Image (cartoon, rainbow, N blue to C red):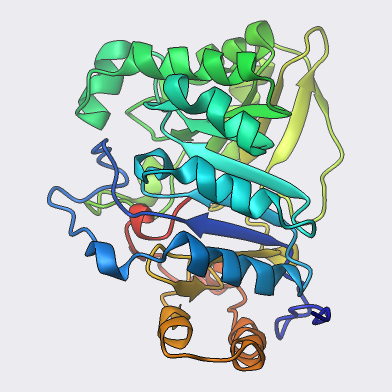
Amino acid sequence: MEEYGKLVDSFGRVARKLRLSVIDKCNFRCNFCMPETPEWLPNEKVLTFEEIGRIVDMLSRFGVDRVRITGGEPLVRKGVEQLVSKLRSNSRVKRLGLTTNGYFLKEKADALYNAGLDSVTVSLHSLRADRFAFVTQRNAHSRVIEGIRAAKDAGFQSVKINSVIVRGYNDDEIVDFASLAAEGGFNVRFIEFMPFDGQRHWGMEKVVPGAEILSRISSKYRLVPLEREPGSTATNYKFEDSTGEIGIITSITRPFCSDCDRLRLTADGKLVPCLFDTHEYDLSGLLRGGATDPEIHEFLRSKVKLKSAGVESLINNSYDLQHVRPMYRTGG
């Protein structure tokens, strides 16, 4: 099959990355992600691995060469390592990662690595077992830590830890997370709280700005800034005296929309060009309705053209940010 050129939106941004949700279900109930009573997709609505493979193949012909598998919790999806193997067989996919809550990682790390997964990112929002149990409603802190160690032992190119920082919840652990990075050789990424919480608790007063996070860490550690890769969500730093790194994702106080190169695909096949925009475009209907590759090709090109300017434009125009959708519906 021929290459399709590039997927370019109306602002000249070129799509290179795909956040691929393979399931909306999750075994945790984090209150800044899940509503109290989540409504799961019926199984028949969730894309099959074959359908996912077809979409990724199509997107890869447009130059989308970095794929991250997300959820919900992707390791809840039975046989997800088979999907990893399928996507790995696509030579146009240059980087293949997965974001997980870590609960099943101890059992799955070797299988995922052997299937061809390049990197693992674990969502961990507290280093304190009691606090972790409170927010996740699961007594699983030690199991997640074991999963992180198993991932590192498995040999992945990268093992990252993501922590959403919420004022009044875990902002007193910022330096502790930095110490985990410095002493354990991890890449810990600090993420500003965004309006995608399931219970709609988000508010600007709960956002800890990236500048404050950096200041707190710099009070203990000397940091060296790293060059930003185009399209990167994080501003990255290495420690002057250790092998670890930190990243700070300033989605609210200093957005990075101007060179955003990401697309998202929900578990039921909706294309989401911008996380902060409510528009979603149904690919599953085309897939299951017998659409040809050229028809899907044109659909993708036309819908990516509709990608919004992003949250940066909303903030610059003094728009009052509101809840968009629960994060479990689109993936991280």
